Image 1 (cartoon, rainbow, N blue to C red):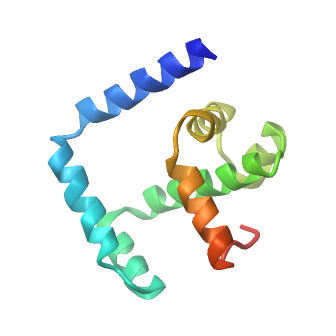
Image 2: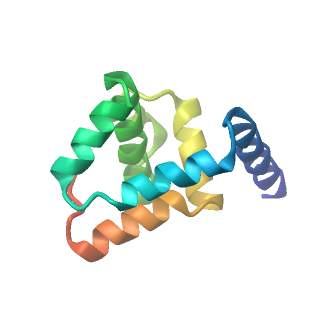
Length: 116
C-alpha cells in the first residue's frame, strides 16, 4: 500500500512539473465552475480539447465508474478501449485520490449517474 501511495505522489508531482504553474490549473478550475449547463460545458470542452482528448477523458471516467462497480480490468478494457496500464492508473486515483470519487458521488446524489 505504501508503495502505491508513493507511486501516486510521484505521478502527481510529475503532472505538476509539466504544468506552467498551479495558477493556470486554478484558472481552469474556476472556468469550469462558471458553467451552469451541459450545453455550456460541451461548448467549452470542445473549444478546449481535441476530440481524442475528450474521448480519452470520457473513457477514464467510464473506467472509474466500472472500477467502482467492481468490474474486472478485462471487461473495462473491452468496454472502453483503454489499456490495462491506464485502467490501473485510474484505479490508483480511485484508491488514493478524491477527484473521481467527488464526481461519481455527486452524480449519484444528483441522480444523474447513468450507465456509460
